[in-house]
Length: 188
Image (cartoon, rainbow, N blue to C red):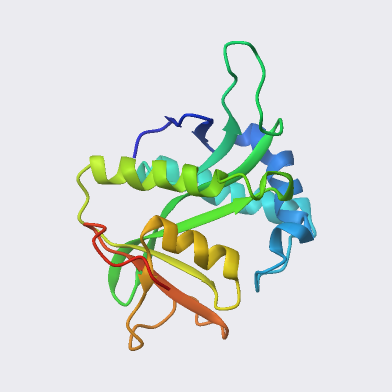
């Protein structure tokens, strides 16, 4: 995965020390977890620990999570909200004795509904394919999280076979798989 990615509207850059406050604000906002089984963070030190792990993943594996921000147009105007719009990316995950990549996306409530997560994750998955990986990518989401599941469909993820265990083993979560060649049907 390239370190920095750009799309028509977005700039994606590896998370860094300077992102702590904005990442904490996102991960502490209950609106960003409305359809999720995960609880928002309540302590800045929780985000500090998570951010340290995310930075370490970049250092050790050259892949990880990216902040999502609007690209500034030449005129300086952007139709998107200023500041952090979200965080997306891939991290290594040991699952069922195999190394896989786990997808993550979370968008600020102010940016929801603008196609930001779709555009950002599509850039990440496209960059991954251009890098020539033949690994599947997995995503874990709450079965009741319709927005996340709809995003997964748009990105080419499909439900895992029922015999595959869900990483983390949390009741109510489902495992979605994006095959290496991206050929699975987009139905969920």
